[in-house]
Amino acid sequence: MNAIPSRGPIARFFILLWDAVNFTRRLVFNILFVVVLLFVLLAVMAGGGGGRPLLARTTLVIAPEGKLVEQFTSDPASRALARLLGDNGAGEVQLRDLLRALDAARTDKNIERVLLRTDGMQFSGYAAIREVAAAVARLRASGKQVVAFGENFDQGQYLLAAQAGEVYLDPMGGLMLEGLGRYRQYYREGLQDKLGVDVHLFRVGEYKSAAEPYILDAASPASKEADLFWMNDIWQRYLADIARVRGVSAQQLATGIDTLPQGLAAVRGDLAQYALQQHLVNGLKTEEDIDDLMAQRGVADTDAEDGFREVGFDDYLKRLDGALNGVDARPQVAVVVAEGEISGGKQPPGNVGGESTSALLRAARDDEHVKALVLRVNSPGGEVFASEQIRREVAALKTAGKPVVVSMGDVAASGGYWISMNADRIYADPSTITGSIGIFGLIPTIPRTLAKIGVHTDGVGTTRFAGAFDVTRPLDPEVGTMIQAVIDKGYRDFTGHVASARGRSVEAIDAIGRGRVWTGAQAKERGLVDQFGGVEDAIADAAARAKLGARDSYRVRYVEKQATPFERFFNRFSQTRAASGLLKDSSIAQALLAHALPQTRDDLAFLDAALHAPHGTPVKALAYCFCGL
Image (tube, rainbow, N blue to C red; front, top):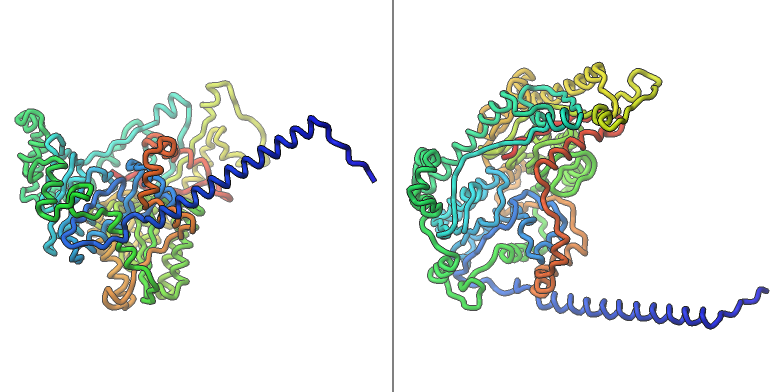
């Protein structure tokens, strides 16, 4: 038996010291844990006031903060943290939530009027705004008063605000209608001449201009022709929408824009007065004036933040959600959202994944309670293979006897149209951006870039094409021929699928394809879209095809990735006053929030992504459209 050596006094001292530190550490962390646990329990018990009854003659205040989206791009815990920190710049508002709040207010006897604040709403696209505008019109038609107020309005915000019965602008605010413009950065000189990056573009269709910025210094004539065609259609519709609700003619609005310098000079540069003069607003009022107006028309409440009886958008949604708790055995119309760029594999919300979105469609197909499906598409496209994976799942749903109706959002172009074309019916807003039936591939090579710093590539291969796709080597012309053949095949697949799905000839689809972008109205004229309408129209159509009866005989369920128990808990916790007080003013926590990337960085990231071909093939075919506003 070995003897255990005795520890000396120095060793015993450090051991005792370490034990004391360890004990103190555990004690401190346990105390902190108990304090936090008690705090959370008290906060949850205290609640956020959501349980208070909604009183009669309440004003619903709808003030969207952030971008209008089809689907949140962050998880519930991240959204809850951002809400606690008061971060509005990174905020998002789901279109479906805005629509259901407006529609619920229409029949809610306790909601007397709606105050619409659009200052914090970021532009997403005209189709979505027009869908909300239609909901506001339904609300007004029910006899409910709608008042809009803004300290400033941009064009997108004003299109929504103008739908109100009364529109007020701050006397120091501004509103300027200027028209639609679409300008991009072009990198040919910087990439090729300055950096020595050779960008090789392979495409079908003279209008497929998505990758032009990497090979040109300015937009091609074909690109300008096509862009101006669909942009003019959207702009004329914008003017008509404003003219209809404001009691002026579209020509008056156009003239006001053309004579803007003279008009502003006449009012000495006062944008608010100019808006009033042009009948774009009903009056000029401060926020305090609006609060007083709401108190006079509604019920004054000195305990309320704004001095009148009100309920906020988020609180109203919580009440609506609370009324939906419980088991609902009615048959379902499922809604799957496909928003963002289409990429291979599993992608987070806000992006479309070939595998992840297909899995949602498959789950709806396998669910016996789902009788029909609406695919809500708001995507500029992306990878061809991922788009085809999703299209196959749409076809499989139909084969399983479940009707599929597509509802297009702001953009459903290129790959976004690819995943839509097999639906039983396609709905779009007249201002939706769609089409862009075309394929391209992009391969940058950098031997000249490396040569600038004295680096050269050389070696051997067992065949003439070994290493042919190495970006540090020049691209062999014969390899370029091979790539173009792959792109041509992709275009034949695209037009062939569309022709089969739409009951047209391939030649007819090619005539309206070749990468050309159309508005929803133009696409309907050309047989790419079946009907005008929003997501609610698509849901009603899908239910009718499945013979589900009246609206109250079925329920609508969005099929999405489920939040984890922690995310659901943190989301509930974040809605309490105690949580808001703890984190709202924390500069350390605010530093955790990220900011949006500028266009140039996004464009170059797209170029970088083109370098990463999928396994098994060196060429990545893309069906993508840079066609947003």
